[in-house]
Length: 205
Image 1: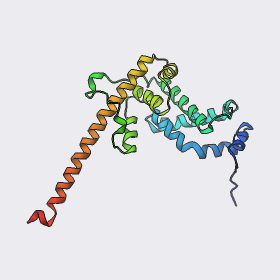
Image 2: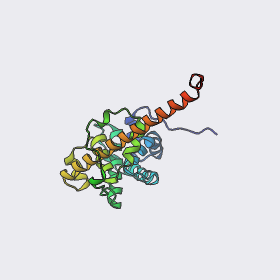
Image 3: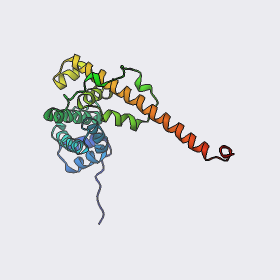
Image 4: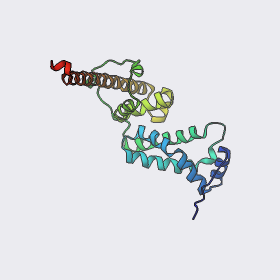
């Protein structure tokens, strides 16, 4: 038996179907955006199971609030904002975003050119995900989502000064971890080169 796959030729048709509450439109939206939105939620919820739960709640919110989408901007961007909001609600509910690390544990002064360091994107995202929840939340909102400190302060019910402090400490920790990664990489390169030289005929003569 052939499986009928719903097809929408334009985004406007898809959104109209969502507003009519058509389940096939729900399925298309989920299949089209779930991968990207899970990545968004994972940046706020380090635990994958939590991120998946938040993402599912986010899609339910998208379907419930679709009438609020005014279609004067990016639909994907609107879904993304819903996911960010759901992630923050989860963190506030679990009081995770307030977790901090004392400055005495950070040995490197902030270097705001840290993003220029040659590092694989995977490693950088892994480092961001390993930040304490408070630092990670503010860093994501400011550096990735593009919110101002004033907006972040309102979203998290903190002061602008706290937002700036969390961002500074996040950058400090990232810089320290980047330097550590560079040192480890350099050490591995030298070790591999030494092993290669030892196994070459020239070295044995």
